[in-house]
Amino acid sequence: MAGRIPPNASTRSPPLPDAGARPPVVVAGAGIGGLTAALRLARAGHRVAVLERAGVIEEVGAGLQIAPNAGRILQGLGLGEALGAAALLPEAINIHRARDGAILSRLSLAGAGERWGAPFRLFHRADLQQLLLAAARRNDAITIRTGARVGDFEEGDGAVFLRVHGGQGPEDFEALALIGADGVRSSVRSFLNRGAKDAPAYSGHTAWRAILPAESVPATLRRRESHLWLSAGAHVVHYPLRDASIISAVVIVEDGLSRAWDRGPQTLDGAALLREAGLAAGDADLRELILGGDSWRRWPLYGRPALAHWSRGAVTLLGDAAHPMLPFLAQGAAMAIEDADALGRAFAPGVEPAEAFKVYEHTRIARATKVQRASRRQGDHYHASGLHASARDLAISALGGQRMLERNGWLYR
Ligand SMILES: Cc1cc2nc3c(=O)[nH]c(=O)nc-3n(C[C@H](O)[C@H](O)[C@H](O)COP(=O)(O)OP(=O)(O)OC[C@H]3O[C@@H](n4cnc5c(N)ncnc54)[C@H](O)[C@@H]3O)c2cc1C
Image 1 (spheres, helix red, strand yellow):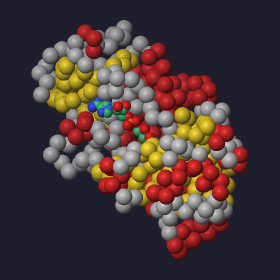
Image 2: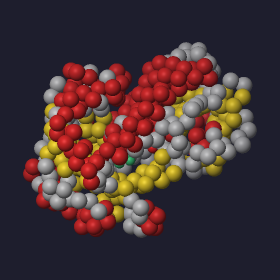
Image 3: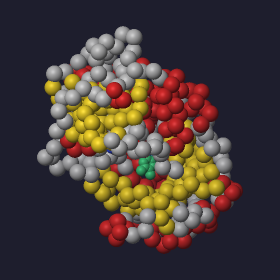
Image 4: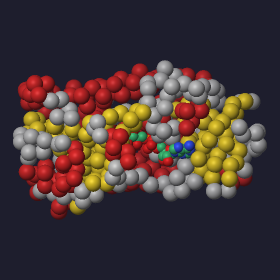
């Protein structure tokens, strides 16, 4: 374990005029959660050091839907204009039956921005991450270091002492507090819960992701709308990005084959994916869309048990590190952004981190756990078969688009 060595000069954040000699708050991980937390904590008045394991900060080539509940928070951080430039605003969500393409419902998103204070926005993940990164780099209170993996830590004397592994070998780093925003495989979480049965476990679902040129997709699926296709044990989501020049698509399957696929291909072409996924893609347009991808990338989905506490002393967790969730409600990043906002509210300079983190987790755990569970239930609903699927399809059609959207109002408000 790290000794109490003061931080190396290169790890030190630039001092704020009134920051005194206090060490920075360290955020482990420069994903969407970690970067939003850095911006929110800087706004609250902290100096923040973001330490990112990867040598280069870059997101996978895939899309991300940012719902109004998260969009409002990003707007509140002064990012409205940048979000507007990077996002595509979908006009509607279409829910189809994959077997024959029947449209079960069309949820118009007109007026969503006025109703919920922010529109639904669609991003290329890299665009959202780069936008957050640029805002963090412009902020004098934030330093970002890449190629810096946060390892073990210990608390004492009002500080957290952590060991950071990088190209130059391990270094010791002193932090006022440590926020583990290091994703589903969070090592901060593993060190916090040492000895507990808390390892990431395969969820039984695999996402296959692709970014397709718009011209390879049937014209009916190229409009500024999102599409969800339901099939037994699988579903497909796709939507346009970057001024509708590309289409982000994901096929999510429940696969008993996961073990074989662990050793199997990391990418599949469309024909192989249709075969392997057992997707009842009877609709010609859907088949054409899937066949249009020559390199669908495998993304096995992992989970961890819900925790009763996210914090110990001056160390806490945020985003997927705290509450990884299946992507069926498209709320994982949104929850990370909500966490960041709650953390910024609870942790004013001068408040002891341990006190602030108790308040933070108290305000967040119930909602994040509810969304985690609701996401899982949504997956069962999407992947129903036989009579359950028929009943679901009737219910979706009968409910109508507006009422369906309003049913998720508890998420977006
Ligand atoms: C197929 C799919 C579709 C999705 N769609 C949506 C959607 O539409 N809308 C939505 O809101 N959510 C969606 N999600 C969920 C969303 O992607 C995640 O919830 C979100 O990216 C989590 O962000 P994070 O910052 O908590 O973690 P991550 O994005 O995992 O970031 C963690 C960062 O920490 C770094 N790191 C790891 N270990 C260390 C260490 N020891 N030290 C330093 N750095 C470290 C990693 O390199 C990484 O950069 C989807 C997920 C999937 C799989």
